[in-house]
Amino acid sequence: MPTAAAAPTDPSMRFLQRLMAALAHGQRLDDPRDSVICRRWVEIVEGIPDGKLFQIIPQTLRGLFRDPEAKARLERSGLRADLPLRVEAIAPYVVSFRRFMAARSGTADEEVTRGVIAGLRLELRRLKRQFDHIFDQAAGLEAERDRLEGENRALRQEVLSLRLERDEAQRQVGEARSKAFRFLRLYLFMLKEELQRRRSDPIRMVTVEVAIETNLATLEALGWQEQARKSAMDILGPELYAAYFDGGAVPEPTDPPSPEIPHPGSAPYFPLGRMRSEAPPGFTGKPLQ
Image (tube, rainbow, N blue to C red):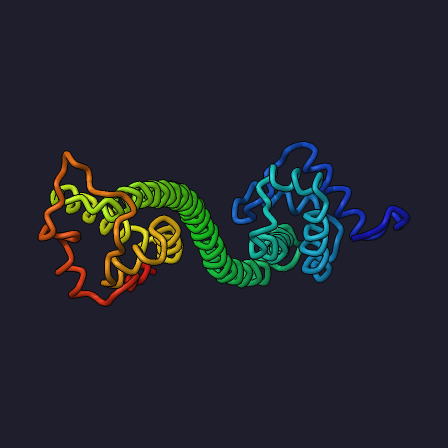
C-alpha cells in the first residue's frame, strides 16, 4: 500500500484517494457485472493504465481489509475479505469495459471500429461467462460457510446439553452411591446385632441380608467395592465378616439370649446362606466400566 509520502501522481495513491472518496459516499462496489457499479470503478481508475489495474486493485483492497476501520467501510460497500475471488474479478471487468467504451468512441474507420467492437463484445461475453461462474462458485462457498456455521452452532448447543446431562447424571450417581453406602452401613450394624445376639427371627435376617446384598451390588457396580469391603470389615469385625462373607464359623454370642425370645438351636442364622454358598466367597463383584 502506498505511504503518505508518495507523490500525488502515483497511480496507487490516486486509486486509493478515489476509492476512499467513493466509500465515503456509500457507493456500492461489490459486483462489477452490474453496469452501474462497473462505471463507478471506471471513474475510480481513470487515468491508470490497464496493465497496472490487475495489481493495484487487489493489492490495495487486501491492504485495506487489514485495517479495521477501512474494512468496515469496504463491507458497507459490499466488498468482503472472505470472498477474494470477487476482489480479483474487478480488474478484468473494468479493463474490458474501458476497452469496449474506447472502441465505441474512437475515430477509426467505421468498418474497423465495428470489427473491434464485435471482438470486444465476444471477449466481454467470454469473460462474463467465466466470472459469472466464479461468482456463482463464490456464492456457493459463502452459502456452504453459512451452513457450516449453523451446524457448528447447533453442535455447540448439543455439546452444552450433553455436558449438562452428564453433570446431572454424575450428580445422581453420586447421590445413589452415597445413599447405598449409608444403607449398607445401617444393615451391617443390624446384621452384627443379629449375629452377636443369635436371634432366631428368619424374616428379619432375610430382610437384612437382602438389603445388604442389594446395596453391595449397587456399590460394586458404581466402583465402590473396596470401600464397601472396608466398611463391612470395620463394622462386623474379622470374625463376623468371615462368618457372613466367607462361610466361617459364627462366634459365640457376647450377650445371653433374651428370656422373652427363646433360642432354638435349629434356627438358621443366614436364610440366604445357600445362595451365598453358590458364589465365590468374599467381595467378588466387579464395578461396571
